[in-house]
Amino acid sequence: MIWLPLLAYVLVYKKDFLVTIIIAFVICTLLTQFCKWVVFADAMRPIVILKQQAHTITGVEVHSTSSFPSGHTSIAFTYALLMAFLLKRKSWTIFFPLVAFFVGYSRVYLAQHFVTDVLAGIVVGMTSSFLALLLYYKLKEAKKLKAEKQKQVTEAV
Image (cartoon, rainbow, N blue to C red; front, side, top):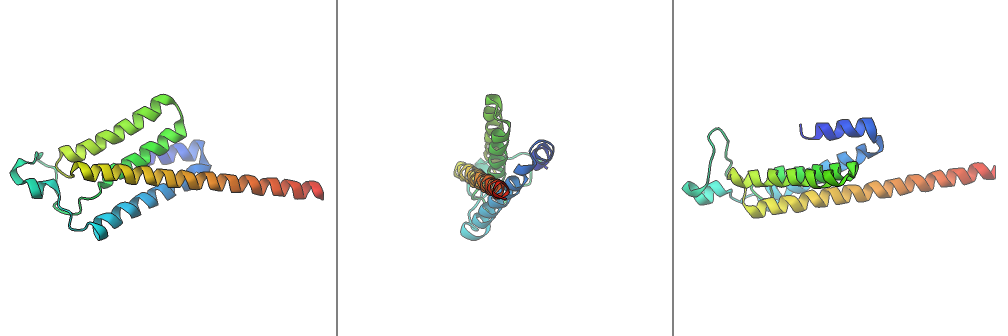
Protein backbone atom coordinates (compact mmCIF):
# COMPACT_ATOMS: atom_id res chain seq x y z
CA MET A 1 0.00 0.00 0.00
CA ILE A 2 2.87 2.40 0.71
CA TRP A 3 3.89 2.33 -2.95
CA LEU A 4 0.51 3.47 -4.29
CA PRO A 5 1.07 7.24 -3.78
CA LEU A 6 4.46 7.00 -5.45
CA LEU A 7 3.03 5.01 -8.35
CA ALA A 8 0.14 7.46 -8.72
CA TYR A 9 2.52 10.43 -8.78
CA VAL A 10 4.78 8.79 -11.34
CA LEU A 11 1.92 7.72 -13.59
CA VAL A 12 0.54 11.27 -13.64
CA TYR A 13 3.72 13.40 -13.68
CA LYS A 14 6.79 11.33 -14.55
CA LYS A 15 6.00 8.20 -16.54
CA ASP A 16 9.62 7.62 -17.53
CA PHE A 17 10.39 6.96 -13.84
CA LEU A 18 8.05 3.95 -13.58
CA VAL A 19 10.74 1.42 -14.52
CA THR A 20 13.02 2.94 -11.88
CA ILE A 21 10.41 2.43 -9.17
CA ILE A 22 9.81 -1.16 -10.17
CA ILE A 23 13.55 -1.86 -10.27
CA ALA A 24 14.09 -0.24 -6.85
CA PHE A 25 11.26 -2.30 -5.36
CA VAL A 26 12.64 -5.53 -6.87
CA ILE A 27 16.22 -4.83 -5.72
CA CYS A 28 15.06 -3.95 -2.22
CA THR A 29 12.81 -7.00 -1.94
CA LEU A 30 15.45 -9.41 -3.29
CA LEU A 31 18.22 -8.08 -1.05
CA THR A 32 16.03 -8.08 2.05
CA GLN A 33 14.43 -11.47 1.52
CA PHE A 34 17.70 -13.14 0.51
CA CYS A 35 19.32 -11.90 3.72
CA LYS A 36 16.29 -12.80 5.87
CA TRP A 37 15.70 -16.30 4.57
CA VAL A 38 19.10 -17.48 3.27
CA VAL A 39 22.03 -15.64 4.85
CA PHE A 40 20.57 -14.82 8.29
CA ALA A 41 17.64 -17.24 8.47
CA ASP A 42 18.27 -18.06 12.13
CA ALA A 43 18.62 -14.46 13.31
CA MET A 44 16.43 -14.20 16.40
CA ARG A 45 14.26 -11.22 17.11
CA PRO A 46 14.45 -9.17 20.32
CA ILE A 47 11.43 -10.82 21.89
CA VAL A 48 13.17 -14.23 21.79
CA ILE A 49 16.46 -13.01 23.22
CA LEU A 50 15.19 -10.43 25.69
CA LYS A 51 12.08 -12.39 26.71
CA GLN A 52 10.33 -10.44 29.49
CA GLN A 53 12.51 -7.33 29.12
CA ALA A 54 11.22 -6.48 25.63
CA HIS A 55 8.44 -3.96 25.30
CA THR A 56 5.39 -5.48 23.63
CA ILE A 57 2.07 -4.03 22.59
CA THR A 58 -1.16 -5.98 22.82
CA GLY A 59 -2.47 -6.94 19.41
CA VAL A 60 0.89 -6.71 17.63
CA GLU A 61 2.01 -10.07 16.28
CA VAL A 62 5.61 -10.63 17.32
CA HIS A 63 7.75 -12.88 15.13
CA SER A 64 10.67 -14.89 16.47
CA THR A 65 13.12 -15.35 13.55
CA SER A 66 14.28 -13.78 10.27
CA SER A 67 15.12 -10.51 11.93
CA PHE A 68 18.01 -9.26 9.81
CA PRO A 69 17.58 -6.87 8.01
CA SER A 70 14.38 -4.96 8.71
CA GLY A 71 12.17 -5.24 5.63
CA HIS A 72 9.87 -2.42 6.72
CA THR A 73 12.84 -0.09 7.16
CA SER A 74 14.46 -1.05 3.85
CA ILE A 75 11.28 -0.47 1.87
CA ALA A 76 10.56 2.77 3.75
CA PHE A 77 14.00 4.16 2.93
CA THR A 78 13.80 3.05 -0.68
CA TYR A 79 10.44 4.79 -1.01
CA ALA A 80 11.58 7.89 0.90
CA LEU A 81 14.70 8.43 -1.15
CA LEU A 82 12.89 7.97 -4.46
CA MET A 83 10.18 10.43 -3.40
CA ALA A 84 12.79 12.94 -2.22
CA PHE A 85 14.56 12.57 -5.57
CA LEU A 86 11.36 13.07 -7.53
CA LEU A 87 10.01 16.05 -5.63
CA LYS A 88 13.38 17.85 -5.22
CA ARG A 89 12.15 20.39 -2.68
CA LYS A 90 14.34 20.73 0.38
CA SER A 91 11.41 20.18 2.73
CA TRP A 92 10.57 16.84 1.06
CA THR A 93 14.19 15.70 1.14
CA ILE A 94 14.01 16.05 4.92
CA PHE A 95 10.42 14.91 5.44
CA PHE A 96 10.49 11.55 3.63
CA PRO A 97 13.73 10.22 5.19
CA LEU A 98 12.48 11.41 8.59
CA VAL A 99 9.29 9.40 8.15
CA ALA A 100 11.39 6.40 7.08
CA PHE A 101 13.52 6.84 10.20
CA PHE A 102 10.38 6.65 12.35
CA VAL A 103 9.38 3.45 10.55
CA GLY A 104 12.73 2.00 11.63
CA TYR A 105 12.26 3.35 15.14
CA SER A 106 8.84 1.71 15.36
CA ARG A 107 10.37 -1.66 14.46
CA VAL A 108 12.69 -1.42 17.47
CA TYR A 109 9.96 0.02 19.71
CA LEU A 110 7.63 -2.88 18.87
CA ALA A 111 10.39 -5.41 19.67
CA GLN A 112 10.40 -6.67 16.09
CA HIS A 113 14.02 -5.76 15.37
CA PHE A 114 17.32 -4.83 16.92
CA VAL A 115 18.93 -1.51 16.02
CA THR A 116 21.43 -3.38 13.81
CA ASP A 117 18.51 -4.87 11.83
CA VAL A 118 17.15 -1.37 11.24
CA LEU A 119 20.58 0.01 10.29
CA ALA A 120 20.97 -2.82 7.78
CA GLY A 121 17.49 -1.99 6.45
CA ILE A 122 18.58 1.62 5.95
CA VAL A 123 21.65 0.45 4.01
CA VAL A 124 19.52 -1.88 1.85
CA GLY A 125 17.04 0.95 1.16
CA MET A 126 19.77 3.41 0.26
CA THR A 127 21.53 0.85 -1.93
CA SER A 128 18.30 -0.07 -3.72
CA SER A 129 17.48 3.57 -4.42
CA PHE A 130 21.02 4.35 -5.54
CA LEU A 131 21.18 1.40 -7.94
CA ALA A 132 17.74 2.16 -9.38
CA LEU A 133 18.64 5.85 -9.86
CA LEU A 134 21.95 4.89 -11.44
CA LEU A 135 20.08 2.71 -13.91
CA TYR A 136 17.57 5.54 -14.49
CA TYR A 137 20.38 7.89 -15.50
CA LYS A 138 22.04 5.25 -17.69
CA LEU A 139 18.75 4.60 -19.51
CA LYS A 140 18.10 8.33 -19.86
CA GLU A 141 21.58 8.84 -21.32
CA ALA A 142 21.16 5.90 -23.71
CA LYS A 143 17.81 7.30 -24.86
CA LYS A 144 19.41 10.71 -25.41
CA LEU A 145 22.27 9.21 -27.45
CA LYS A 146 19.81 7.19 -29.53
CA ALA A 147 17.77 10.33 -30.25
CA GLU A 148 20.92 12.21 -31.27
CA LYS A 149 21.97 9.39 -33.62
CA GLN A 150 18.51 9.28 -35.12
CA LYS A 151 18.62 13.04 -35.63
CA GLN A 152 22.02 12.77 -37.36
CA VAL A 153 20.72 10.01 -39.65
CA THR A 154 17.65 12.06 -40.50
CA GLU A 155 19.75 15.16 -41.24
CA ALA A 156 22.15 13.14 -43.39
CA VAL A 157 19.31 11.87 -45.56
